[in-house]
Amino acid sequence: MEKRIYLDHAATTPLDNEVLEAMLPYLSQKFGNPSSLHSFGREAHDAIEDSRKKVADLIGAKEKEIIFTSGGTESDNLAIRGVAYLNKDKIKEEGPHIITSSIEHPAVLETCRDLEKEGFKVKYLKVDRYGFIDLEELKETISKGTFLITIMFANNEIGTIQDIEKIGKIAKDSGIIFHTDAVQAVGKLDIDVRRLNIDMLSISAHKIYGPKGVGALFVREGIRLKSIQTGGGHERGLRSGTENVPGIVGLGEACRLAKERMNEDTLHMTKLRDKLIKGVIENIEESYLNGHPEKRLPNNAHFRFTAVEGESLVLSLDQKGIAASTGSACSSKKLQASHVLLAIGLSPVEAHGSLRLTLGRENTEEEIDYVLDVLPDVVKRLREISPLWRKK
Image (cartoon, rainbow, N blue to C red):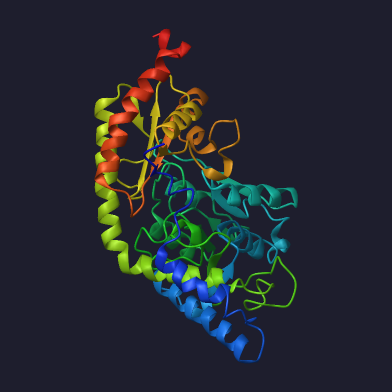
């Protein structure tokens, strides 16, 4: 295989060289336990606190409001369960206690479904064809028992960006805690948790050129959570377990670089994204864009093709040296149609014909030209063997 073009940055990103360089000392000579009182421990502790500041700076938070976790999934669980378990007394009250959307990441959806088994009520808001929730429905759904609203910042499959500031304002005016899964948005969008009225926000390092297995949860000062992991009381008692110092250092450096490069990266990826979308829609018949045409992540292009099976498309592109996906990497091995695509009104057949191409800072215009040269022929070949296309 001569070419290797990576267009699956929503699944994971390559580790930035500067991030790796920052991590290396903490994988070897700087190995101390940050809870130890001696110089080795203090060295590790100081590195964690420096990283905490870098994460906080990226989203407009205070250092003490950052809790380090193993990634976005744990952050989502800690936020949702942590609030829920402090509100068990509201289980018997009328109305929804937790409000979320029908297109959340499984880390949110499955957590909410699990809480339903424990007696909590959950309202799953429907979305329109672009993936937006209805703000009026959100207001009408709020009841006396509602204690948490959790709506993702930007969708991991179709890239649609919710009106987080308005959602946060609705929650604030109603005295309800607002959590957002911002795993796909952090590092790509300008986020200020105070301006946006966000109370809790989930981050994952490996989506922003950091290492896998580390993330963070922003918890606004004054918000109380019940720990879901017992032990030695690390991270203000909210996340016990010896800290992953190299990973945390990597997350901190990735956040520093994201803040420094955000404007440049956004302009670069938006230009490539728009070229990709225009080229696909204009040159492949019966191709359609999923998600909002403008209010979408700068690196996300999500298409559907009539009479083409998405998994076959991904495998065919892989043979051409192009890494793509049909949707969320966390559920890409499941055979059922994407819950996100079904929620925006696509039929199961339409949903199965979708392709997600997500760009990164290292992608080039030449690579997009290659994709636009290869993709029409791949789609044409797959349609030639498709019984659905022959019926047309």
